[in-house]
Image 1 (cartoon, rainbow, N blue to C red):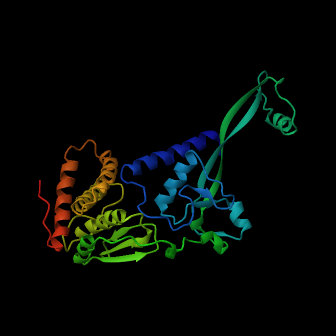
Image 2 (cartoon, rainbow, N blue to C red; image 1 turned 90 degrees about the vertical axis):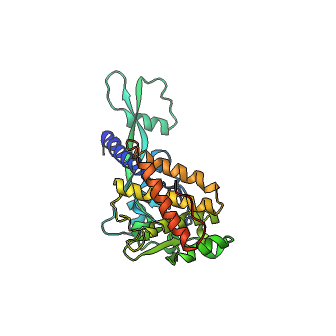
Image 3 (cartoon, rainbow, N blue to C red; image 1 turned 90 degrees about the horizontal axis):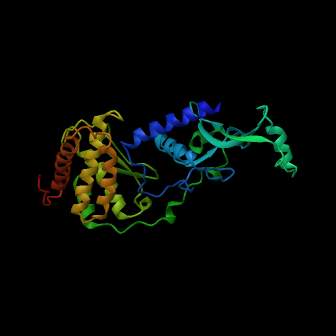
Length: 314
């Protein structure tokens, strides 16, 4: 792949990443179970990718919900007996290289100069131009590879993590909704409208009780929109205005509930998250007002389950 194509591919990925970033916040509120660095890393050489590679690999990990943040080349996985899962797409890693051109003739003298450098000879007497360019190679995420030795898939042992002290009022509120919540060793949280169930990581994976309740009430706010409850249009396609509206709505609802429970430190995080979404809708002056009103309705609906004092409607 030539340099121009590499730049084009990088640009396409970053454009996509920035567009998605307007609709989502990628910071995790729970500890990774992959046992690896929070940074993208080659799981054979232990090399931590840098620069643009870190951005692209982190984005692809989030996009495809990979459990691991570890990567390896086809050669590396083949040598270990690994097999790529059918339909898997590779990711590109880039690095900067240099070529040397004769200043007078323009001839490529890279091979000659590298030999001189490697043998310890001086190249100061040569009249040359040094030009940088990008080269690339392909890697696959560990989640895309089967049949590797077990050590590569080792997770952090959950018994090494400890549960946080539960908040009685928050726990009563969660129970009062009668929402079905499934806990598992996972790196994602979601609400499934089809089954009307919430899926969360184990409590002990969360960095704090504030983080847990913020995520839990985000998903419970989605739960409030089910057709049997507030009947919001929650089956929206990712990237649409309707999808953005629902996500901002439930984030604000979660912020309202957490504020009611006394976790004011979560409000700033939610505002930062909301600001990302607002950039999508910067031309719609009514957007945040409408979303806030619906969020108020959702949070009041949830608080009403526990017969607590509702938030005033603005």
